[in-house]
Image (tube, rainbow, N blue to C red):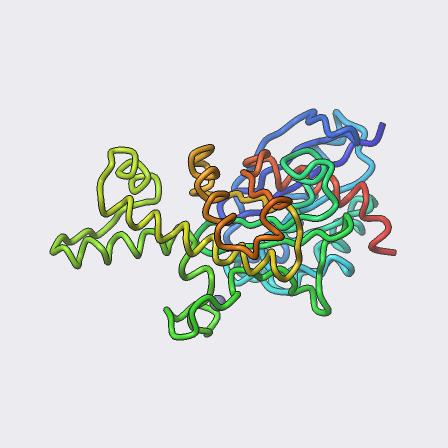
Amino acid sequence: MENVACFDIGGTSIKYAVINETGKILLKDKFTTPKNNCSEAIPGQIIEEINNLRKNYEISKVGISSAGIIDSKNGIVVRADNFEGYSGTPICKKIESSIGLPTFIENDVNAVALGEMWMGAAEGHDNFVCISLGTGIGGAIVINGDLVRGVSGGAGEIGHIILNENGYRCACGISGCFERYASTSSLIRAYINGAKEMGIEILEINGEEIMAKVQQGEKLACRILNDFMDHLVNGIVSITHLLDPGLIVIGGGISAQGEAFFKKINEKFATSVISSYAKHTKIVQAKLQNDAGIYGACFSAIKGSQLRN
Ligand SMILES: [Zn+2]
């Protein structure tokens, strides 16, 4: 039985696990993400941890999920602006040359999609799109069981589908991107603006607090959530017309709202999409929560040999 050392590199912590090829988690923990000199510090800490893990486990491969633009084929972090000195790191080569184990890396949203396909909400599906709702909107596309990467590794940036060409300016420089309307941060902005129009100044509120107000039946919160769902559905409709994936898996922040939220999203979708897509397309909640990244890292290491030589 093969065991994979799996790492999920995020902004605040690096989660890690030992997972065997049947998907059983043998150990799981995390450590704080280094803040400086990440090109050395991140692979360095991962190497140290693998050496620790090898005292108790037979490890045959290493799988990594990382934030940023990732060149999976060459094992390089192309760009990761939130990590000092991390962009350009040939992370797989560094780890391989130090410990001699084949190492694979995948972008974090792609890893979530692979994890959900292997052990989660997309199990048994060869075609689906994964949407991650957070400060922005991340996306990953799986067609015929494989991630769609695009010519430069940039496919799946569904957060930057244009919903409104005269709309809010996005961090990417374009106006009216999907993520300016259907991310958690856009929900918060809409609520604060809505309150302002009513003469109420709110300096700070988070997504959970807005959802609590929805539960209490507050009119403003309900209206803002309804608009938010309309925007989200518009994006999903565009994705459906482009790819006809049959399954959309939504994870992150607001998607934790569960059944009622997804029932409403599916209802709105069915009346917004061209009718021939409605019957066979389902929008579901991601299943693996915080473990999706490490599962995806594991899966990419198990299946990754075919990608890199
Ligand atoms: Zn954008």
